[in-house]
Length: 276
Ligand code: AMP
Ligand code: MN
Ligand code: MN
Ligand code: MN
Image (tube, rainbow, N blue to C red; front, top):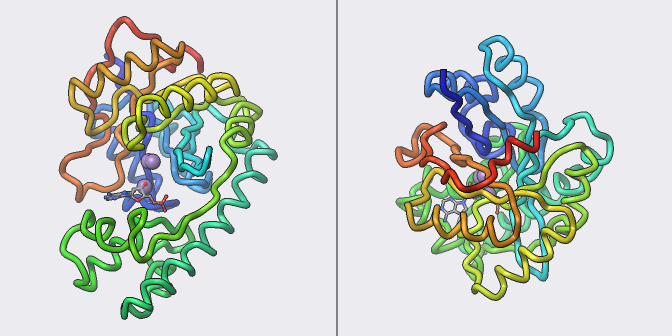
């Protein structure tokens, strides 16, 4: 049987709509043979996902997606093949969990000023103990008819520069990469073409990322077109980074993104799983 990887997806431990177990079961249905669950700033879904993966004979790679800040810009760094019990990593992400709660309160206050009440209670209830993200706010606004698409929530309220945007100092990029490497994992730049950076900022960022021990970059994501795969591969080659593949699946409701539905990785590039 051929190997099919998906190394980036979300469960109810953060802003995904399926439980960790259900993510694994759906991956199995989609013929995924090796999966990493990479929830935002939490490892809470790992044990459940690992158990289900073992039962169903799927190769499970422990993972996380850490929110980081470098030069006042936010970058998502995926940690793969980490030890989910590692003390340093667990201590590190605890501060992000507190930060997410405080930020959620601030976003809710800003929405209240726009005459949108009770959002905090709403998103806390929806997150059900998991990490609260802007995706929860978008869903709340959608469910209560303040907007008509998720995207509109970001365009009108939640995006950078919009009335309910709360500028946040996430984990320092260098520290977050250290947490991952010290937990035995490899640090991977998530969705590199989504940061709206100029080419020169991208060069500075990747030069720094490799200098501090970053080892990978996502070359294929759930929505990459062939040109994007080529551009990301070129970055991988230029900076000596290994290539990762991950759908960034959040929910079956998004018809554009499915677990394991990924363009093939170009053959002239080093796959990240050679480092596991
Ligand atoms: P946060 O980390 O709390 O800022 O939330 C980021 C999450 O919101 C991402 O992981 C996505 O799930 C979601 N998200 C971000 N931008 C958009 C967008 N433009 N449209 C839909 N969802 C988005
Ligand atoms: Mn998300
Ligand atoms: Mn992300
Ligand atoms: Mn993600």
